[in-house]
Image (cartoon, rainbow, N blue to C red; front, side, top):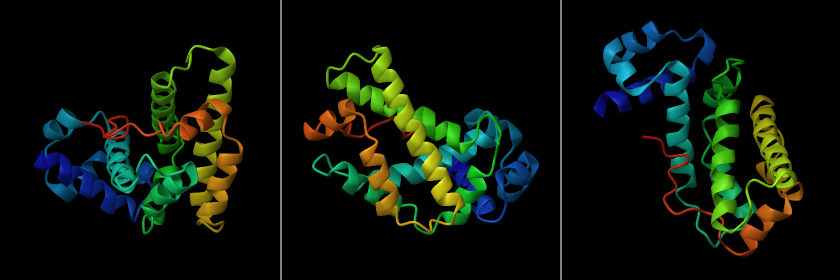
Length: 191
C-alpha cells in the first residue's frame, strides 16, 4: 500500500508541472523508484493511476459533506476542496485519451446518482429518466472541465447554480428527502 500512495503522490507532483499525455510511465517509475511490476499490481496505466489519485482528492474534498446539506452547499464544499489544484486539474483535463478525467468523472457520477435513485425507489431503467439524468451528468462533467480550463474565472457558486437549475426532478426529490448522500460511498473511493 505504501507503493500505491507513493505512486499517487508522484503522479500528483508530475501533474502539477506537466500534462498527463506528456508523462511517461518510465518517468513516473523513475521519480518514485517503484518497479513496473508493482505499478501494474495496482494500476492498468497512467490514466488509471491519475484517476485514482483524483478520486482520493475528491473523496477528501467530499468528506465534510453531510446529508443535511443542500445540493449547492455540498457542491461548494467539494469544489472548495479543489482549491490549490488548478494546475493539476488542467493537466488532467487536457487529455483526449479514452481514459481521461472527464470520462472518468462522467462514469463515477452516473454510478453515484443511479445508486442514489435506486435507493430512493426510482426505476433506473426508465428511458426518459436515464436520458434526463445522463444529460444532467454530462452538463456537470463538461462544465466542470470548462470551468477548470478557463482558470475558474466564474465563481464556483455560479457554476453550481447552473447545475441546480438543470437538475432533473428525480434527483431534486432525493435532495428533498435528504436521501442524497451514501454514507462512506465507495463509488468515488476506489480500492
